Structure formats: structure tokens, C-alpha cells
Length: 491
Image (cartoon, rainbow, N blue to C red):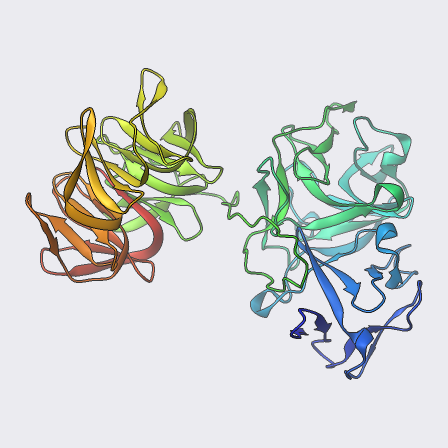
């Protein structure tokens, strides 16, 4: 457990004994101990955020805590931060307290634990980690000449040291069910990624286990941009991959401690590669779930069917096929059981009927026509498409407008946060109440909503202020099953 003082410094407390973590002294090499908590200054730590956890730096001496090495014969010690090895710790809370990687010793000349007890990588074998020149490196278990080895890739080629004989750590299934493979973003690592090793000395870096395109290509990444993997099936060096997945935790709330450091860690939400139900091609209603998964509505069972992908916003074409904003901000369309880019536009919102419109990252409304994105000069926050295939928007000044080609015109005097249209047009007002356009003015209705869209019969569906999903029955809102971040209706 931990407590944080007004300076942002943390005090780490043993959950079972109530004792505090402190170094045995002020100098380098001081061993870590646990003692009754007092007001001693060197019980306070500067918790510097890193991808997947924190680095524990002594608030007084500015030395960093090094984890145990040499098969735990060297206990945690205080070292120069520039010379630390993999020193990322993850304080876990509540139901997450006993989750995460569980490691067990394994030996080259002895049988491995039963496969059912090992963490399944879906890459042909199981994850391991071994010590190399004072560093701790993740790899993959391989059999060679009757012995088990933990292997990985260094730089762009495999060196003899890349295979560890004798003793190594093996990741076990126990307490590891919350771990998933998340796609890299091409940007920074994020707080979900699990640090599984590190390099010390002059090339100090935390490393994370990655899985590249090949079935057996397991390796490491230090920056989230390239995966140094070795394909054990072909036994040939492979070029570092730029598209890969990183071993990560699924739930982004597993820890909360941010510390006093100014460095921010990117924290996107992704969809794990859990087994999914059979894919659907079309549906009358689609939502973005609270996990950023897309879900299709089954009107017969009145249940949501989760689909592949990570989506931020969604809209539905007249044929029931959804388009969306992927979590990397690209406009995408659903077909062949996956999301495919529509051109190469990054956008903040999307709307569709027979034609797709989107708002680019500069706020410009754009139309997908002749395989390119054509701008319609304006500044917009939200967009949808009327039955005549012309867009309506919430402009940057919060006014509702529609395209009266080639110019934009105000839609009454309405202002709002979101807009949905089809057989009828509704907005989410600045007061988060729903308003319906009657052809002359905006009529206010009951409710508190965040997002809205309209079905082909003119019935609006909405996301409530607490995330619930609602359908309008002409007099009030009927709550449907589930919660969501956005909703799209087949017009």
C-alpha cells in the first residue's frame, strides 16, 4: 500500500505487516529494509512514472531502487539512477493486488512445468526471462539438442549470448489472466504495458515483451516503436518490426500512483485479443462500449455482440455497415470482419448515410468522394448526415448548422454538444437536455444525455449522462441493456 504527502512523495507500506520501505543507509549499495513507519525523511520516495509502473527514487539521496538480481542473491539496493537495471515497480490496488506476471524458476536439463500451468502466448510456446550481463531480458522457451533454452533477439541479429542455458524464469498462468497482447501505437509506451526486463549500464533501458508478425516471433521493445524479435521457426535474424503487440495488462485502472514527476505517460485504451463472438456484417444499432470495443445490436435477443477493434466514435451507413474513428484517430469502415481505413484521414468525428463525412483534426468537415477527402469550409466539433446525404454539424461556436450547398446555414437558434439526424434531427443541448427540431424551432424534452443518434423510423437513441443506453418512446426514455461511450443508428 502507500500514502502520499503534500509534496507528492510516497511512503510504501507492506500490506501484511504495516511496515514501511526504507534503505539501510544514505549511501550507494544500501540494502532495502522494512521497519515500523516513522517520520524519517528517507522513508519518503519520489515515484517517477514510467510505462507500466514507477521508478522509486529516494527523495533525500536521489538514488534509485534496483530490484533483486543474480537470481535474487543480490537483494534490492540503492544505486545511481543512471546505472539502474530494470527498476520499474507497479503498485497494484484492490482487486488487482494479486494479479500480473508470476514467474517460476526453470532449468535447461529438467522437465518444464505442465503446459496447462504456463502462460499461453498463442505464439507457439511460453514466455521466459533470463539474466544477461547484469540485465534481465524477456524471451521465448525453445528446445534445442534435448535441452530447454530461453532465447531472444539482440539488436538486429542473434548473438550466441541470446540463448540462455542453465537457469531462467518461466511465466506461469497463475494470476496472469489479466494479461493481454495490445497493439503498439507507433508512439510512446503506455501505462498498460508490462515491463518484463531491462538493460543496465551505458545502454540503460526498461524493456517490454513484444510479439511480431511471425507465429513464433517473440522479442523485446524499449520504446514501443520497434520490436526486436527472432523468428525461432526459421532460425534467421529478422529486421525489427514496426507493427507488433506488447504484453500488457487489460484493465487501465490497475494502479493509480502517479508521483511527483512531470513526465506524463500515454494512457490509451485498447481492446484485448480475447476470443470474440462470430462477427456480424450489419446491424441497426452500433455502440462504442466503455472498453472502446464496438458492439452490434441483435434486435432478436436484445443483446450487444462485441466485435473486433478499438473505436472512439461510430456512425452507421444506410446499409447498416458502421464507420468509425479508430483509437489511433483514423477513419475506418467495417467489412471482412475487420476495420479498414477510409483513405488516410485522422479525424475527431464521423457521420454517414450513403456518403461518409468526417471532421479532420483541424476541425474541417470533409466528404469522402472519388477516393479522397474533400473539404467543406467550416469549423466543426460533431457531424452527422441527413437523408439527402448532406451533413449537419455542431460548429466550433456550438451552433447547429447544415450544409445548404455550397454554403452553411444555421439550423434555427440551437446550440449543443452533439447532433443526430435521419428521419428526424435531435441535438444534445448545452444543458445536456435532448432537443428535437420540428422544422421551425427546437423542442426541449426530458433527460440528461451525452450523445444521440436517430434510427430510420425517426426514433432517437442516446447515451445518458451516466453512460446508460436509452431509446425514446415518444414520451420518455426507456433504458436498454449496457453502457457506452458513443452510439450510431442505421438511418
